[in-house]
Image 1 (cartoon, one colour):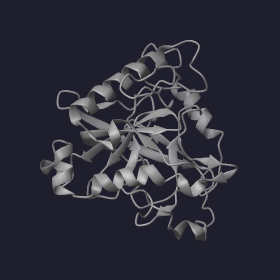
Image 2: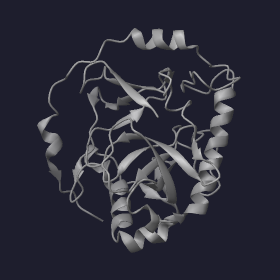
Image 3: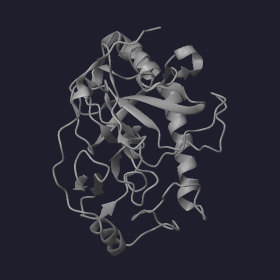
Image 4: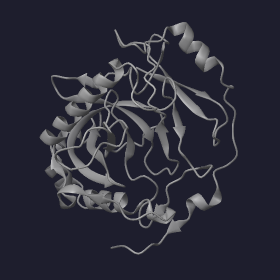
Length: 288
């Protein structure tokens, strides 16, 4: 069980969402939350960054100590994804698997592109609209290989194991049967979500085809191996911050006192202004 602690001013660049475990210890959602909730049953922990139908592009801050969730910034402004008609905000609960890392120094043999330097992304397709910072347990169903500006950016398709319809989903084909059109909408969303910002459409390996859960789990295990090398490496790789409070023998292990002091330096939480009005507008760009 994990709980969150907000710091800074909401809807501003100072906002941060930190995590504590059930002992009250500050933890990194990137490094300290285990990848597996049940390794024998292939059930994974997922950190929810963006609840379904919201627009704020929240993400684990990989370049900050203890990796709180923050809102992405572009050209000095808080970043929101557009409502790309007919999609309202993010169309799934969106987040990441902890203790995974897509290594930018490794060229993926399946895609021919290097990793994007982030934890692996997850699209949770269940009934519940999750909350930011929630840690849920998911069953993996399949995977989509997006190529984002020349980088491999895998997208895991998964469902909350507590979802009332969870027993209907065991592989990617079940998504096609039970939720027709959802996978096609997912490709459409990822293809076009950067276009309103003036970027080109994203591309995909395998001709936009979703691969099954076996390949998805293999990719997850591979990115977990990359993470294990990252968390033990001295000096650290690039700008990634590996500060953690629970990973044994890691050179970046931080004591609870120092972790609390780091968080304590930040201003307390306060309400911010309202969301910009134009976030609710629809974008009617041309669809390929």
